[in-house]
Image (tube, rainbow, N blue to C red; front, side, top):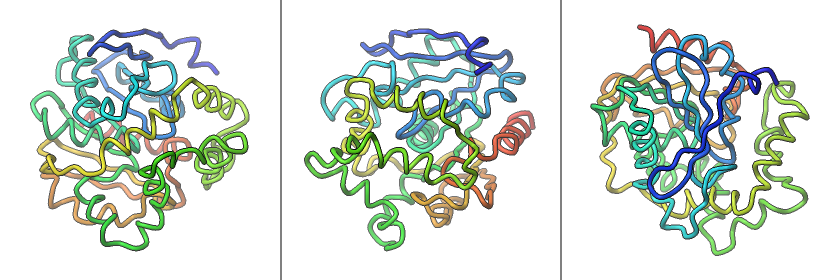
Length: 283
């Protein structure tokens, strides 16, 4: 893939661990945070357009791919996750970066923006629930409860073991099988994901994000940073209902609903996503 020839690969030591970070592009800094079961490569489809406008800082989040994977569920509590992002900002001496997050990366971005509103210039959320809204839906909305059944499974002792069965069958289905546009990812992409999933303790560490953060009671949910939310409306895991009530928590929010797109809107609609991000950040 062409971006591999341009991208710079670093190992950054922060908070007593090493994060694997990819850097590409020139311009104002934009930190891209991936989710589960992903790694930095989850942003590969939008890198070609975004790198011409921004300096992209794309970490493997703690526990994923080539970043360190500290043992113990407690090491994946949200306070550690947002401290990692603050550490990256300080390491690279970034001045009020933009932050974008997909899936769990979005949850980290939500909480980071609440705690450090003076550090973040603008926030972008892609197919990721606002923690307060999601907590409520997991208690009250039967459709979202069903869509999130894997989360309830993760909270059981050893509940993540199904992820390893039949050559990562569930993970392949969750990513490749749920695509609306089946051509959005190919066999080369699958090889990259299988390699990332195969890293020792990577999947268990990813599941620890769920186990360590059963609720966000210490999170008020109030976001004062200008925010763009992009949501693929055919997401099988995060239903459109997660968008309802965002304006009650986010003072300045723009919501883009993308039809005929799944959880993986980054791969299915890369030009649309890139364009919306660029327009929002340059406004």
